[in-house]
Image (cartoon, rainbow, N blue to C red; front, side, top):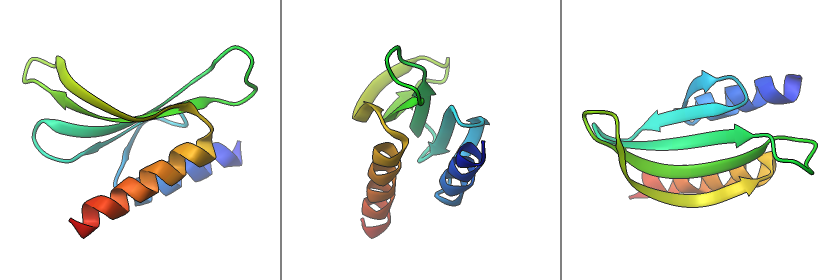
Length: 92
């Protein structure tokens, strides 16, 4: 269980809000743009698989544009992708 608390803590340190511990995280980039990390159980895998994407929400809550950075991958691969993207944002 400490692995999940560690993930919550690490993503929180990168500016993400914990929506559902170990499963859903979001970071607001602007009024409309958000970074999202989502975990899910996938048959054949013993651990959660994670997706990381950027999406635009309209005022009524609809998603209108999504760019997927990595999909259904290990927690380590997802975290590395998030870390690289955050570093990229901070440089630009």
